[in-house]
Length: 495
Image 1 (cartoon, helix red, strand yellow):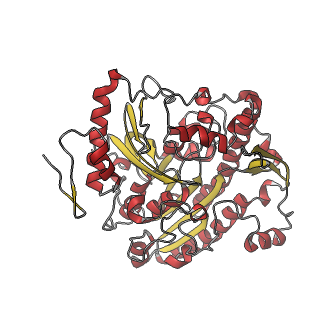
Image 2 (tube, helix red, strand yellow):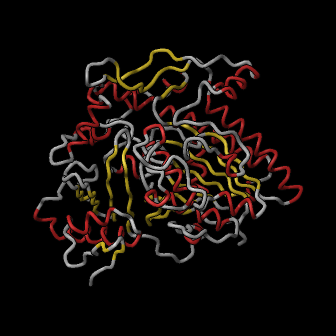
Image 3 (cartoon, one colour):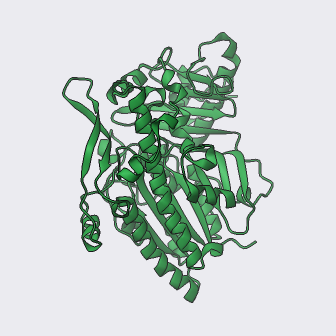
């Protein structure tokens, strides 16, 4: 089959896999994404390269691991990483623009501090920042033009600052606007405007397009209208099993991060309500996604356009007595949804590991273009087409800090997960026996062989990538005789 040239790329922020019907949630209503998965390919082992917005998004845009592109943290909390992509870094936009594509981006960008999509030749306005831009002039103007009420929130829900200085982070609140006045609807409207123009040109001249819409939610704070705030009965919400977390045998930073987010400030009923509101936020975005998918059909683009849906990372939402994301490499924030529908392919579920970075060469492959060099991802198109392809049997991720610098590396295979924490307490989880990652068995004698195998595998992969974290492992990890000495900055693996 011929690859469809158009791509509609849909992305959410801080989105748990277990909120979607197609990933097994029996309560949350997500008909648009469930329908997309029913016609496309659902990746069940899809991971982010790092569970933090800017580095993950920069990896998607460049096709590079975070340590390589250097945007290690969000610019609002910059702990010493780059603020902008280097001018010589590859970007997804450049080869598509050279191939004659219409390129558009709507919504959250968050790749750097000042440079937005327009800097890369993409249609669309730069909406800076990490959270919904309720005070942005474009949104305020759109509200007035459509006769919508201004942004206002009632009944805000705050945590409690652990140092006694007062209230902590804002977690949720009732948005005093109808659903059609939300930022989410605004972004869908802006996307539809571009889509209609691109469709007309595509049908007239054959000029293809890549159009992305990135919502800011369901990232906290969950500020949503009553219709969605009360959509789900808290009594139907099961609390995460990992709320039984004790932090015993785990890095102390996890306990401190729990205190930072005042997770224990909320009792079981409060957490059920917060999770129910989070679910409502997911449905609110799914309703907007439904508008865009309907438009593809109405504009006679459904059979001409691939649709991609994913998120930059997940969210804790009370799991492990944590909130937001941070210095803990649990499945809650590293496993993300990955759904791709390519017209002409058979609906399928893929069990191989895949990575957000892989979507960069995949989109280029859909356009008939080769991957850029360098590129750390692999095209998923063979898997999408059902062609013989082994896929990955493991995934490696990295983290560099959020709110404060903190370095971690992770290797996750089908049964085990190793988290290397240079501060001293490493983690090993047997995900078959302990799917909620409550028991750190790193020091258990029964897991000595597994620990050694995964440590060597992680070390060799970091060495292959050129990730400087291998240098610490060279001297501090149980890697046997295979250490690569660092001589004048050049690593040579020893047999």
